[in-house]
Image 1 (tube, rainbow, N blue to C red):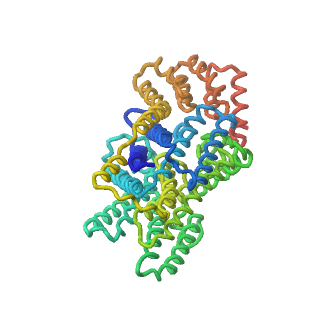
Image 2: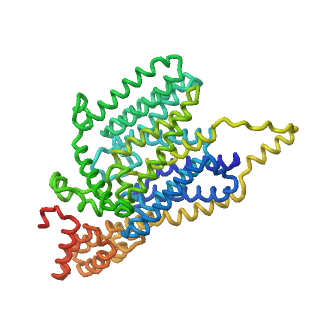
Image 3: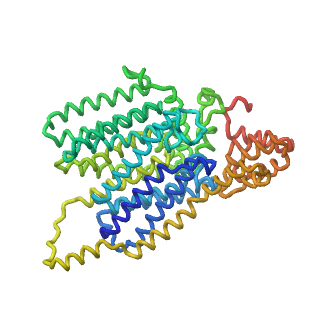
Length: 561
């Protein structure tokens, strides 16, 4: 594509990633974290589609054949899951409450991935690299405010107060880890002035401090793993490259000790092991059971929460009590395989392996240390590592998907090619050519405008519903509150809350009138049937039906025997 178009895409990718990470709406919406991020993600993804369609004639497909095949395969199977899995269409398309990782989110991530791959050049990489710095610096600053008790938002949060803009200390610590990796890689640049290098190390210290305040080990593991990769690349391209092999041996030994420690084995177990590892094992086993029982199309996008009670073992049910559940496998691969089937996770793995191969190929043929590419590659590896023990939070996922595309595209676009010498032109003609190459096509502007408009219309729906629900709660208007149960897109968590509150405040007739259709729309929601079983206006037949459904959905629950 033209230089002007790739520059436009670079700005689009950077702004989308930064805003999807930083935007929160605690004063406006009931869900202040996920739905605003979904709106930005979808707007950016469809804007990217608009630019791609406007420049489709300029896109060379030869070098990108495998890239396009895998991206197309992911989209096709994702769409097949939406059509054939047979789960609730609202939940599959827009995502589950509190997660928002349904069909719409994955399509947007895929569009950004493709757009990043097709536009990757050094300027786009630089822009995106610095956008990570900006988002990270703002996240660190906000984390420090939270640690000092100066947070202007009154979050409802049972964990560490340092949750940043991502709603959870684990996500905050991981993202600060990404930032620290980029800062460290940049500080190793031979062209950096000494005062900038000192500033980088001071900021890296702040990153470590904020990660400590999150009380989450994820960030330290992410940061140390990424720094280890950056140091390896720096060593092999430095004057002391003879230390590369000993360093690799130490790094491998350290990795093995960390892995053993996370499983409560070895000398580092007392530092690393947490009881939550055992709980993650319960989530993983349940996710694998869902995968095996539904290998082609999975259980339906973002439907893990509907199936967890059915898939968990008796031991997992009793470990912390039957009411402790999860709506994610806490492993991105198992989330994809359980909700989208084995073909979907297989294509995703191939896409990530393509990015890994591209990163290794570029680094292998580079003679000098490249702080930008190396930093992004190390962040990408760190993202993949944390995704094994975490879920696909949109504010983190957007960085992993865009960097995946950038690695592939930059490796292809940086290959040595025998370009013909340009014809001899006068300075005036050359200036005209340069000016022409810098103009953004009207079709690109139209494409990005239309794409963003469509994306906003789709992506804003959950945010609009969340804003209206919060407004209905605060208004004290019973009619507005009852109507909020049926806001589009329908959300079983919102419906359960409305029904339960109506019942508690004596509006029993209204509660049953909302619960009846909800049980037909969300037949696999344990929460719907559970609140149904507590309604005073439910008939004996309805109460018996609710109990049967609860037993079906939670067969190992001893309280339902």
